[in-house]
Length: 114
Length: 118
Image (cartoon, rainbow over all chains, first blue to last red; front, top):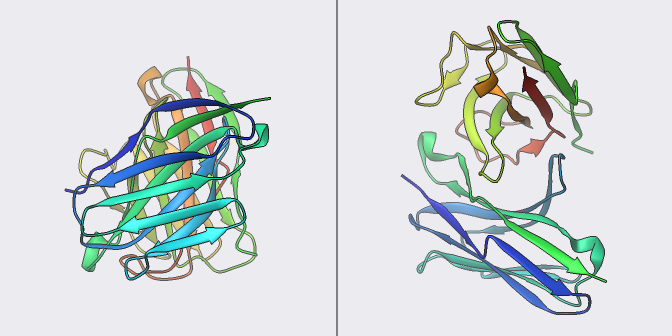
């Protein structure tokens, strides 16, 4: 059974700092990995999706990497802003048959202080 | 494109009553819809997967008689929490995909529904 762990559970940084969020998963047989943002009481916004054959994806100040063999992904946020404050969720999609399901981590609560 | 809506966004009900939550795909046909539940500071947990016109497939530990799912059209799925109890209070999120369950199409998520059972 796939398990996804996100570290740290919470992170508080001053505005302008670069930061890294970590995600690890136990079963490396994944189809893809996705990073989401969730604001309090809201749904999910997809940030980046990395296919299993890819090493990284970039969008603006965000960069996500994937090391499938070691079961790890990182989300790098450059020059953080107060508007980046949210919970960041990592989800992996299994591969094969009914395993094409998303398994989520518990998330990292990020607070960027002005 | 690929917008998914949920209604209501929040609901408060008395213990023992039933609550219906709607999930709609606004600009695409959702062959498959997924229902998730999220408790505070916990990850999203998949409850069930439904294909249009078919019975839903429930995850282990989810009571199908308590959480009734209907996916009668390609743009609408409903989740009915029957005889709700305080422990059912949670954030319910749906997602929709244009592909088949077990496929690789992207899931698009709704904004969620906060259910509070008194």
